[in-house]
Amino acid sequence: MGWLTKDFETAPCEVEVSHRFDSLHAHVKFLNGAVINPGDEVQVQGPPVMAPYGEVIREQRIARITRASKLEQIWTRMTGDFEFMELCEFSFSEEVSL
Picture 1 (cartoon, rainbow, N blue to C red):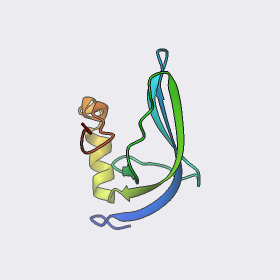
Picture 2: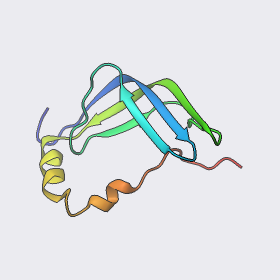
Picture 3: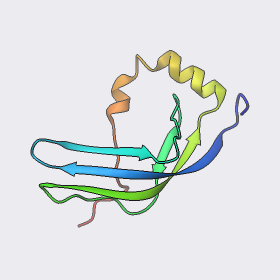
Picture 4: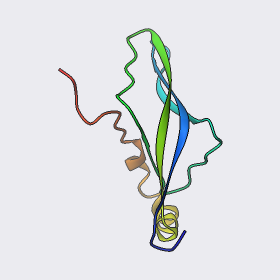
């Protein structure tokens, strides 16, 4: 990996979405041991996983990992503490179904 180039890889993963009173969460577990580093981006392929209230849904999917360049990794480590709140912005789908 170079200072300015990005690498891509795919990894099998399990998506868990919980929509219960005591737990509202979404987790992605990589089944091949892939590790995410600062600046990397992960996009899970397929339609959104929707859990009805009171349920936990688990589905196996493929994730596309975009590896940050070395320069992006350094920048992310340097500025990560100052931009922590941006990490709290999540998007589980591109559109809302009506």
